[in-house]
Image (cartoon, rainbow, N blue to C red; front, side, top):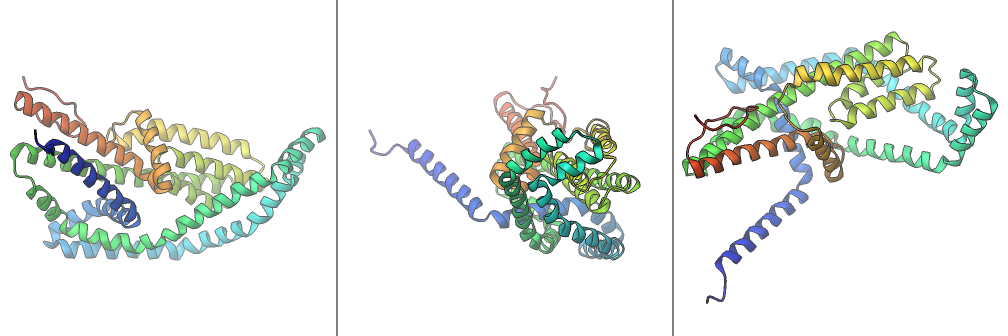
Amino acid sequence: MPLIDVRTVRVLITIFLFAMVLGFFYIAYHTLVAFLFAVFFAYLVAPAVSWLEKWTHSRGIAIGIIYLLLIGLLVTFFFFVGPQIGHEAQRLSGALPALLERVGSGQIAEQIGAQRGWSHTTRDQLGALLAGHRGELLGIAQGVGLRLAAVAKESWLLIVVPILAAFFLKDGRAFNDTLLSFVHTKPQREFLQGVLDDLNQMLAHFIRAQLTLAALSLIVYTAFMGFARVPYALVLGTAGGIMEFIPVVGPLVAAVVILGVSLLLSYPHWLVLVVFLGAWRIAQDYAISPRIMGRSMELHPLAALFGVLAGGEIAGVLGIYLSIPVMASLRIVWRRWRLYAEKKRFGPLNEYAFGADIGTSR
């Protein structure tokens, strides 16, 4: 009997390598995040680059033209709209400390209650409740401020991501061929090629659909709140559109922020705002989003919710945003692996396109 079991050694080596990979991911977390967002940005502009490449006959020139157009659009946007957004954001940030002080002291209850016709008893009870939880409320506000500061520290991604994306756009096909070259058997090559094709289609559709939904929410929020004369409508509408990028949690946070700021600033028509936010959420989730997003994710709601919660625990806001495509990617790998295993056991099966069910050949 051999002193060393070969199978046991292989298992231990596999576990060690897996632990090394996880350790590398943990250490290089920020770098990997930059590369992930660069891939997303590349998927976003890839259709325009491919279309322009047909006319220029050079992918590098097409990428340069698209980048110049994007820079021009951003400069134009910030030249006309940016100053107004910055002015409103500065005013709101300057007013927040006084608003938080009024909430912590319970004065806000007296003010809102007087406007709404509440009884003195109700106003006193609500004011005492707020004053009694002053420490907790200030702690929540400080926590939100720290989260915003942490997000602001990631502003370097705005410069690094487009630069990295340019390399993915130019050499993405070569990366795909290089990865396939490491696989030598035909069944394994078919498995890897199928996974890459499905991931490519899913991510491209997901990124463009998310951008469309976010832009639509930004326009609707800003237009309605501007028409209804909600204070700081441009800043709140922009925040609501950005929050649309964060699955599940983002829209809820946007609604809470919009309502909270409106109530703190004594906006009189808050009930109309509640009805609008509820109606828009229903329209977005059950009418607009299914048409734009389609069946590209094909995730059960429980799987999506698990991914969002787990992503938030692992990587915060970035983890929440990446949770849905990561869960969809795992589903793609699982379905392709099932097809690969069935081929090894029973012979060739009908290929399935992304979004279709796996079926046996007749």
